[in-house]
Length: 303
Image (cartoon, rainbow, N blue to C red):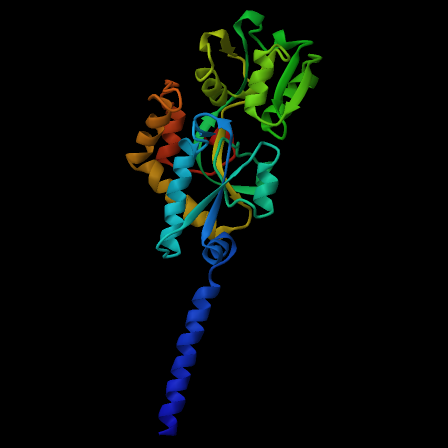
């Protein structure tokens, strides 16, 4: 009888220990989300069509839809009946610190994935390829980077764009006055009101801002570029291997399925809210390859 009791207790302890071990397997963001019951997404104010707010101030966009797929995958991974999503507005300067300190779990926007940033954060698979160019008013007669000599130029603080503008300014001795701002909307307004001649930003973001302007024909985007095509990725915390595996699997499955190109078409070749403008930017051959073979590489040459 006593042997039976001891055997039962031993079995119970073993089962309990296995349960504890399974619980202990959750680490990082997955453990945080499971414990809190919600996941926090960082979104942008005006990064059309990746991450911006609509007329009701709801965050929408291409990157937001991708993050929704990641959230679904996290919910399945954690075997949750429901998972609340909370949103935090981020800017170029704040997005990496807010990721590092745990305020946000995913940053869903148009953040460039490069080797320097990978020292602080990680990314899931590339969802867009872009190059850094400038926007100006057509009536400014500024068309090339050389034309910016001695002019006032604006770019978001903490962005790769402002670093590239500073590098060109020094290397070509352009004598530009480069003004950092908090977000794209402020930068666009400075050009529109004549406080700056040009706005340096990723070409796709410039195209989105121009598309929703009162008079899109009043603006131009330079052919000259400050960079080679660079990858965008959904940002997550550095060192969080388990969470990245879930995000990578979710984005890889999305991009390689018919749903991936369809999602791209929804935001880049069809009318989008709030003004039903069409950016009319078909998927490039390089972007098609990036979807067929998903990668989180920060190297532009790999695409």
